[in-house]
Amino acid sequence: MIAAHSLDGGREAFARMAWVDSYAQLSAVDRDSALEPEDLERLSIAAYLLGRDADSEEVLARAHNEYVRRGCLGDAARAAFWLGFQLFGKGEMARGSGWLARARRLVDDAPDPCVAQGLLLVPAALQLMQRGDITAAYDTFSQAAAAGERFRDLNLTTLGRLGQGQALITLGKIAAGVALLDEVMVGVTNAEVSPVIVGIVYCATLDACSGIFDVRRAHEWTTALSRWCASQPDLVPFRGECLVRRAEIMHLHGAWLDAMREVERARDALLQRGERAAGAAVYELGELHRLRGEFAKAEEAYRLAVQWGQKAQPGLARLRMDQGQLAAAAAAIRLVAEEARDRRARSRMLGAYVDIMLAVHDVPAADVAADELSKIAGELESPFLRAVSAHATGAVLLAKGDTRSALVALREAAAAWREFPAPYEGARSGVLVGLACRALGDEDAAELELDAAQQTFETLGAVPELARLRELRKKRPSSSADRLTTREVEVLRLVAAGKTNRTIADELGISEKTVARHVSNIFRKLGLPTRAAATAYAYKHELV
Image (cartoon, rainbow, N blue to C red; front, side, top):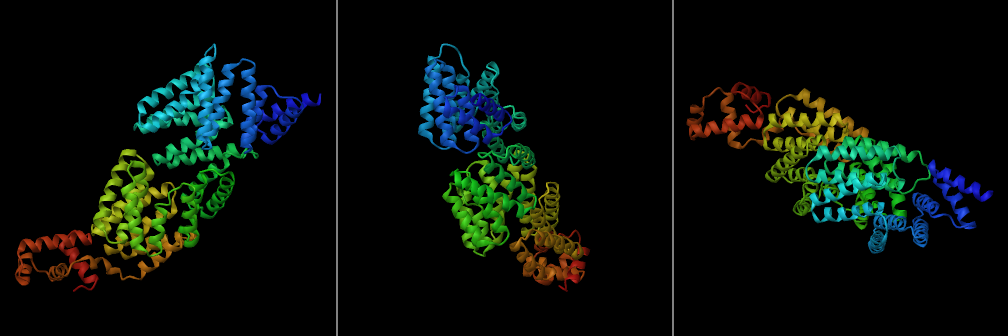
């Protein structure tokens, strides 16, 4: 009676996702008398979700062996597949391959079609993706999804449709791919599939959203999965990844201290379990330390991230720029630019590349990078990337002296950041809007923009940006005129004196065509429409 009660209790606890209770009761029954293979599978899942990976593997292997002993080759193949898939997730490729090979042999020996046939299509499709044969991968994932429907196995159907969505996005069919991912995530958050594949689906979906810079969708699904995790206090495997994503969203929205607490929890959990995702957690922690001016902690975090397989760029290059080590920053980001081949990798570093190139006064290089970023943003149709691109374009135009065009791009960026909202990025764009207004002689508007940016930086604790802004505010308002050459200043003074181009040419001993070119450059650099405006500017800034 006690054993029966514990078995029923273990099954009931499993159904309501009380993993500690389920594991305890099923384990107790198993110690007294071996569980049936179906209950061994439940015990294996409960152990996995509690982070007891070794126990989970041992119990699932027992279930597999019992299925083989009973001649249930299809069930044995299915258990072997999930054991191999679980080992692949941990990075144990040799053991994982061995179990998948066993699953294939059992499928061949099974007298009837079984769900494992469809499950084995998933790793085959993933291999095709890795080899770059995306069309073939899509077809194979489609076969897997169809097999899931045929065998009424939602886990297989979910994995197949997940792969279809990923393949479509890779093929550039973003809308269709995202629609499939949304459908898959609905099933995940409604608990329609095994908790074992929830982490797989979520990480793949977030990776796809990250690849197309779909921040809003990533935020929405992170929130949904966070609620799913919160409903299971015992859950271990997915909390680390979930916390990292939550921290990234909090970071974007300006809740830096909350983000730091979340990512520290994720770091500790992932380091303890030895998961590679720890690298992403530590890198995010480094970014938060850098933004707050805690440079020693940031550098330590970047170095640890590299040890866990995470690249430290562009964060480390930005750190060197913040530390005033401009040559080191430029060398690092140039190397990253050379190594980044695919569109996704390049788009992640181009914003930093533009900032650093402008810091070292390499405006042509920044101009080329901003143009490339604009093209990628247009291809991906990503609001987030468009905001990054508008900021970069505006910064380059400002450096080139095309102030009015710069102001248009920078206002577009600032408006986009407000929509997310992303206060830090918005304040950075606001600073450049202020500088553009100052260059155009609108000191009141400039002060309003700079005041707003300073308040945001102070609220966030963005120490490096505050320091830069305070230095900028010390400079005299007429700094835009410093972009004029000596000859252009001479021409501007004569224009302000009311002289024609022919008179100026005679007075300076140059051709009238050259004077016209100087006047055009002056108008462009200062963002002025007419000679009258140039005259007013010259008097206002005491150039006459």
